[in-house]
Image (cartoon, rainbow, N blue to C red; front, side):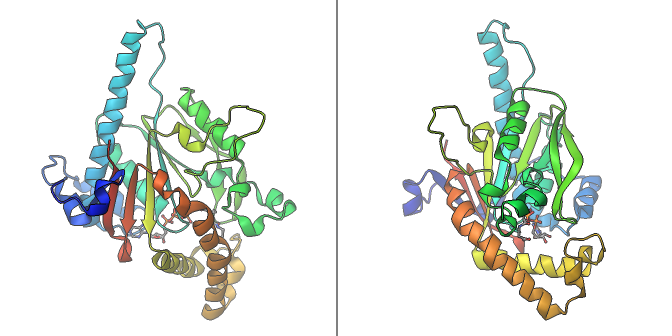
Amino acid sequence: MDQLAPTEKYSPYWFFKAEHWAGFGADMSMTLTQDEVARLSSMYEPIDLDEVRRIYLSLSRLLSAHVETSQQLFRQRQRFFNSEKKGTKTPFIIGMAGSVAVGKSTTARILKELLTRWPSSPKVDLVTTDGFLHPNEVLRRDNLMERKGFPDSYDVGALLRFLSAIKSGQPNVRAPVYSHLTYDVMPGEFVTVDRPDILIFEGINVLQPRELPKDGNFVPFVSDFFDFSIYIDADEQIIHEWYIDRFMRLRETAFRNPQSFFHRYSQLSEDAARAIAEGLWANINLKNLRENILPTRPRADLILKKGAGHLVEEVAIRKL
Ligand SMILES: Nc1ncnc2c1ncn2[C@@H]1O[C@H](COP(=O)(O)OP(=O)(O)OP(=O)(O)O)[C@@H](O)[C@H]1O
Ligand SMILES: CC(C)(CO)[C@@H](O)C(=O)NCCC(=O)O
């Protein structure tokens, strides 16, 4: 870096404006094939493919360098232990944090598609922490329905057991599944994670620490299992707009389904529905962002700062 911002010199991060970051991918020989472009475009949301080329392709290359290095280290350690310790390399876990509606799932899906293209990681799985929320029945019982997404609304024990099983190299590890349609965990539904090269583990709470037990028992943090972590960031007002926009779009689509938990909101006037969305944002999600999510940002290895239109404006990455 020839132009160290005064604050950067003493920061654990390097900061790159998006245009600067885009230059790092300029000589990347791998280009997106027509098929891959079609696959990315057909994923749920319209994704700006220039943005994929500008930001995410090089990011996926850098991540794949981390994956390759950890695979090399695995082989070196095997030699060190005279091959006494056999077994397979456990998945490289990427944790992805950020506010509700900041675009974690979308970013995770883009990275999954791109990462599978690099030789070191043909198999990439994606799991969200939503499935580890307590079911509504439990949240209602414990008066936590207005605290969905707050630390106490998750079954952290189950979440840690899941990650521990993945990192111990177990095959066919199951994660519970959440439905945004029914607004609840789906009883008896699971996704199975079978020794992928990479697991992207995405959720608002993945970088949160927890209270250490007084009895001296070992209690890991979720992030203890991560090989790399990403925080998706944007200014509060912008995330607020994305949340309301998404809610109003869902009102025209998914909420129309009579099975939708929010079906009643599709019958309301636009203004009344907007008022509901504003309430959910202010009383639950914004509060959670300020109290429990944003404070975890400095724990990430990489921060993607987005601006209007979901375009990345700045990338911060930890110096090694
Ligand atoms: N790169 C992107 N380009 C265009 N739109 C995007 C992008 N990322 C996210 N969005 C839009 O922003 C909204 C929020 O995105 P998404 O659902 O991925 O967020 P999230 O962080 O996973 O939210 P939650 O925590 O509520 O599950 C969605 O409506 C999505 O369409
Ligand atoms: C499931 C979570 C917590 C995270 O994805 C979120 O989408 C949510 O439901 N928050 C609660 C308030 C709301 O309905 O927006």
